Amino acid sequence: MSQIDLARRGVISEEVKRIAKKENVDAEKLMRYISMGYTVIFRNEVHDWVEPVAVGAGLRVKVNANIGTSRDIVDVNNEIEKAKVAVKYGADTIMDLSTGGDLDDIRRKIMKSVNVPIGTVPVYQAAEEALSRGRPIVEMTEDDIWNTIEKHFKDGVDFVTVHVGVTRDLVERMKRCKRVVGMVSRGGTFLAAWILHWERENPLYKDFEYLLELAKQYDVVLSLGDGLRPGGLPDAGDELQMAELYTLGRLVRKAREYGVQTMVEGPGHVPIDQIAMQIKIAKVATDNAPFYVLGPIVTDIFPGYDHIAAAIGGAIAAMNGADFLCYVTPSEHLGLPTVEHVKEGVIASKIAAHAINITRFKEDYERDYMMSVARALLNWDKQYELAFDKEKFKEIRDLRPSRTEACSMCGDLCAIKIINSMLRRD
Image (tube, rainbow, N blue to C red; front, side):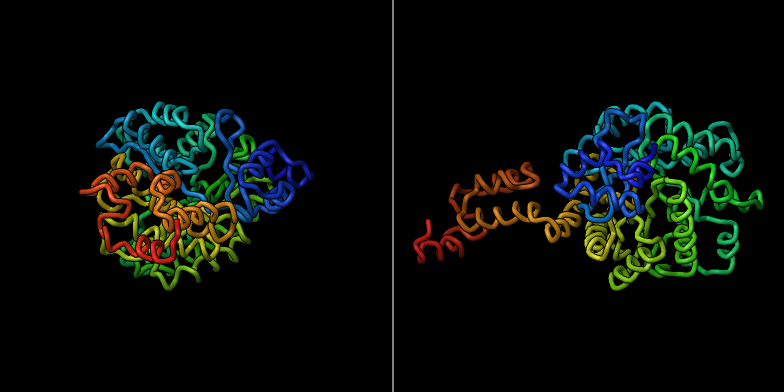
């Protein structure tokens, strides 16, 4: 029985109890939000070693980290290290987006390496296996797609991105709607190309009820992908993006009727003055489904620093109702991220999420308050203890030429030291 079914019967599941205790929220309220579809729990019924995570109304903003091989670079041990580093620095979930190597083996090894929920995009594997058989992506069959989805479910994947909103009608509209960047969603593009090649409807949309049956069997969360998200600032909020969003809203309602947990994925690249509006429109269009955003990235001219641009957008998005932030690394738009880039991306998104969480949860703010106290007292040991990234704290602190109680920037001119002395503070 799915989490939604249990909640509608008034049953507080073990997962709800664990999450309520961990997040210090009321279990009955959490149960009601799940029953309405405003909150989802990531935990496939066969993924019995995972620590469940919830996303949505009344909870902390969460962070996801993407990892995975490419066709050019296949090193599963490196991806496992990325997964572990991402979790160490605060990622609540991991998405395996691998497209090179033995994808089944890579996915299963990554899942065994960490205890957080795992997400995937099954159509990537369906496309890769078509290429491996010497066929173009557009010749993957409907059975290829469905068999891959079911395989991921059976392996214990907790949430999957499915580009159900890339419909034949919207693909036809693309011919008339002029975009600067076009499509940047890999999975969405695979399906759009498939639709154009076969002149048939997207199987995931056409047979959405079958997808719901499979998802409910394992209680997998369906992440309704934004295949037509803007890939550049000029395309933000255009006809294609909005039309797909309203399609996803209709499908959210159908999934809830089936008792299947769903969330909705959001943009992409959005000018900073549009973020609040877009999040609020999305929440209305999807009846408050949990909203999962990539960034949003607020400027296009800082390759190598997209993790910062995304953190700015993520904080604004979360302040206006986004529930789940997908990190962006410095490698975005440039190449496969390194382990260090994964760390930087996670921390940037974690800052964005934490900046909002401290406004909602007193216990989250408490640590920031204690850091302020430690700084006022020049208590460096306490500051080290409270620092999120202790390695970075020590690395910079150890660069001082002397061991004064102040930092080397101020030295004897330390404002805190001077005023404490004048006010006779210890």
